Image (tube, rainbow, N blue to C red; front, side, top):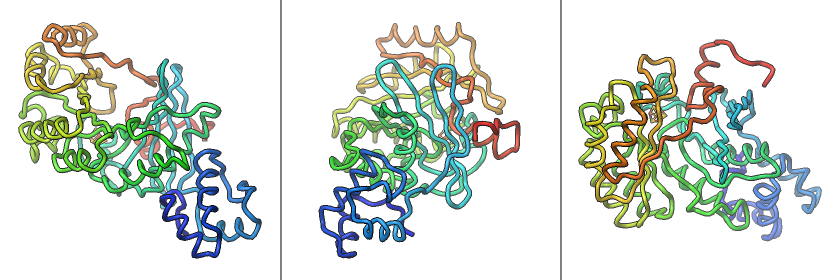
Length: 349
Ligand code: SF4
């Protein structure tokens, strides 16, 4: 059965026309899927009964099911989903006073092996399909009714630029004016920084914003924290970022996970300010959310010192308020706990 969430409006309409349905039925189905977000074809009550029956034998409407949901004291909600082949992924709703961010996964596991990340520790399985990416947004929004997400960030499990075709198609489906109609500027791709992928976004989806997981301003330490840096060092990364900024005019975000004794010195802050000078950017400083790795979170004093050094050098930097700390909202932690058969709150399933 074809996953209906993997189809653009145009593709869906052509399939419906081939099934002898009127062309406008495509618009109606898209409206039910993305505006009304119904769960079954039977709920699409302005379609003839025979058409609904035909659709239900041709298309799947549920590429995954929720296994667990954890809600943090600060309103962050994390969902663990099982895909049709039994693999697990996570998606998160992060609430801010002025917006609600949907944090979406793009791969099962991740091949990038960042040592401080639970997903990186559990390895890579496969890329998510277009429908699996789109459906996460639909399913999260269903759980939020009557509110909706204000923006989407591809910052869950996986490196989005390694699954770029499916990510871009998912964005175009969620952007469709006849469906969810989420503006392209509301999407952010969070990446370690693969130069070809960065240039492809600049060319093919210039309104999509970029967030770069930098974590160190020098190649030696960054290669330890981000193994990809051994393939694409800072020089290549920043050449691609300059091209991206020149082409799109967008401001960049640099994510900087602060780790005790590794990348949190005043000199690191100085080097960072020099590295990003000249680019329109701000820095999100994120004190490490402890996983099972041996790397530790710095003291609050060191976090403040690092941030102040950046401010003194004219860098716009914020310490990101941690969300969902009590439910382990950092990517991959809930899945890892489940895979390892650790204590798991079954009542939430
Ligand atoms: S931090 Fe991101 S890129 Fe690195 S292993 Fe984890 S999911 Fe992959």
